[in-house]
Amino acid sequence: MTDTSQAASGLTRAPMTPARDADSRDTKRSLLRGWRRKCPNCGSGPLLKSYLKVNDTCSVCREELFHHRADDGPAYLTIFIVGHLMAPLLHFAFVKWRPEPLTLFTIFAVGCVGLSLYLLPRLKGAIVGYQWARAMGGFGKAA
Image 1 (tube, one colour):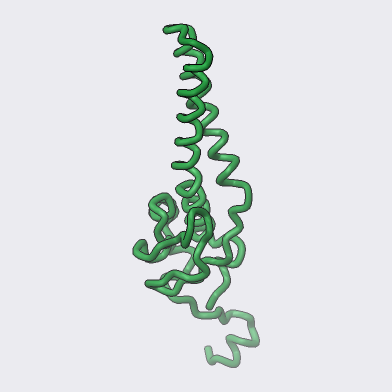
Image 2: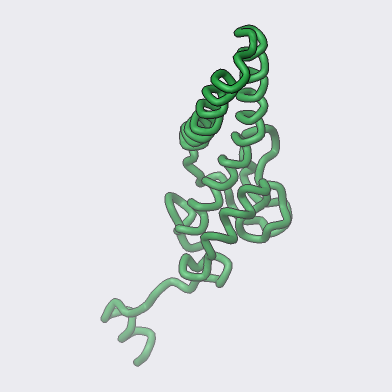
């Protein structure tokens, strides 16, 4: 089949590089790279340029990262995880040891804030990695 007959029959497809081919993107690997706050494509370049701000492009492989749509997902997952971990621990600590209320509040407030600050950028990276692996949003467009 010639190029003109392929174009006329609609069989042509825009060539994609292997790094941008949606079928070759491993979801688990991309999630883990995002969790480590690294580029989901190469795993070397930094994903975030500040606490939660995603780089527009990877400084190593030049992958465009500005397509992400993490929005409120990382915050929702952080609240979900911290709440499900700390609520049973709070109940257990109160029933088992009966500490003073101010002591209990102080310990669990510091624990909740610390765990939230740890999880939030990692979950954002994981969500961006998942979106990249699944070619969601602008990540699926051919170069």
